[in-house]
Image 1 (cartoon, rainbow, N blue to C red):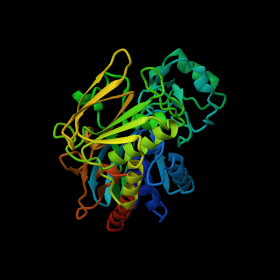
Image 2: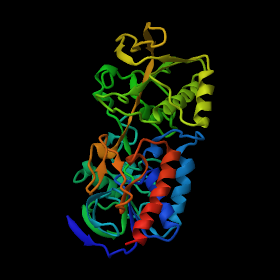
Image 3: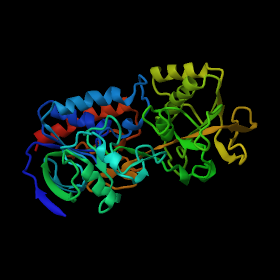
Image 4: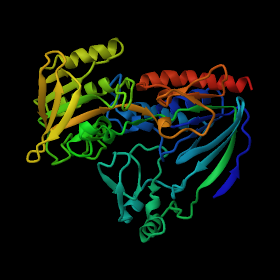
Length: 425
């Protein structure tokens, strides 16, 4: 591994994470004149929003918000982007941090025109992480159509193989560079904003809900990919076990959330996510029955409450107040039976459905991978901001569960805090 020394950047800001909160922080700081380094571990910017079919409050596709932000980044020379990068260490104090950033090889350089010839040439296929493994892609791939930077990636799995040679030979622009190696750069910055985002809680850890045992049980993020036009089924919601159109869909709320054995807190967005996904089903299958098993429906704010009331008025959407105890599968029909006790009537409910969607919770990335810096966390892994100390801050879902709009608002505030740390150095 080689090490490059980056020239000190007095008054600069480091933003870690290129999701919506990170993009907002970087853009807001850069557009008032500050130099910003944006570090993202994925080969693209956009975070979880890029994986959605639609997001609140306007039910927009990801292109709606991402396109504007990507344009603002392209037009601003104050922002320097490092994708496929990770922070290895942060030392120093507010106003003067030394940061080591590891850059992992993409094996494709800036000459890439996204012509796709390398992808056509290779034979190896790998699971698509972007689609949560629900489809396979070539080992030379563009993460998604609107990926920024617009550049292909070659999987390290084929480096050193004949497939890698095929990719190189197919590229007439000299963009495939199989000799790329990891390297570390050092940055000097005045403040650091950690917008490291969230991960869907691992549903396979919830033993009674059958995820991983039965194919027709998926997570809410997998549902987003199924409904997305660029998803594994080109936007058609189908049962994974047999590719049939579902005549009934059951949503299981608080799958791992508000549970002392998993995530003890409410993840804020899960109820709205399921209500939104009910509209996906309804748009494709007007006669389908939809069952929503819930503990409490939480729709914060007038706009979200109004949306809930509209969904509730649909006679084919049945709300059942009761925590799901177990699920089972009919091996002949592949239907899933969801069992719960109705908290209103006291009756035990056994509801069969073709497709079951688990509303898995929002877990901060830092809960599983502690960040290499002097930060404080609460018991659930969310960053606790110390504004009196300054210097480093958590933004977006690294600090609390939030929807896109709330993340953007909070990230704007963290941009200001980062600027204050630089000004007061």
